[in-house]
Image (tube, rainbow, N blue to C red; front, side, top):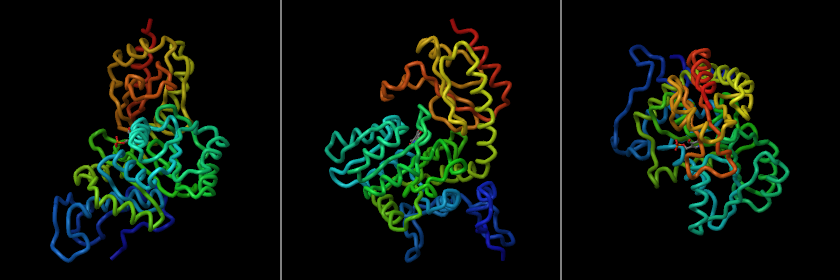
Length: 359
Ligand SMILES: Cc1ncc(COP(=O)(O)O)c(C=O)c1O
């Protein structure tokens, strides 16, 4: 029977479609079933529902192959973040971007306030300063592009400075996805995902993931997941697996829409600043009319949906500072757009009409 594991030479699009399938055999389903099980027949490899599930494994095989490592799925992106931060020992120093996803920054603040570790927040675009900050770190957290400032980190340079200091390097790869950036090939020890976003891609499931090519780190992460129980839902894993099959198509379309919209937004008088890193589907704009104009904009469209989160097929947007946890260095009038896969002209007509109508 043919081996369903993809050859090494297959491109990411082929891996996304092909990996994690049952063997090609007569009457075998092409897709893994949704295995609802809290326990298994004794003396096997899994034993209990907190230790493993074939539907999780199928998702993990695909994402692991796309990132170039071994993957573990978690109940949410933040459960994955918490598990990785737990690598830092008592009183250890964690270096992280001051503009990392605010849930990550809040976890660091919470751990620091309880005397668990020390956090040093840095401007991730200043590579020399980050490298200096790594000197006594145990763990260096990167997010690139950052959410929602869309700053880019020089991952290779920072990873080598961090490794010289003996620190682990983690990259939250939620925005770029493995189709635009593969941090394990750039010096990272671990990759973290909110699979809730582009990987699942349909705004219907919460899921997280950790990927590493280091077997020892994999065992530590798996041990923590087993012990703490931040395990993924079976249905959510299956939805994310189904989403992964079309990641390349969705991302290509969202990206081409986003690139074109970023260009048009730069020409619009109601927009003071456009941030777009040149890839991906997220664009951040700062409204010339301030936070009131931003609040009015998100209430004035019919196609664009005012909602948090990102990476779904539908276009959504929000003023990020409406969240009290968003740092004051994020402009008050910044609106983060998660560009979906709809028709470009429909998106632009709706957005331009709302921008034109701003006072
Ligand atoms: C970059 C990034 N990392 C992590 C998370 C947390 O993921 P989740 O919402 O799946 O817990 C998010 C959520 O917005 C995010 O944008």
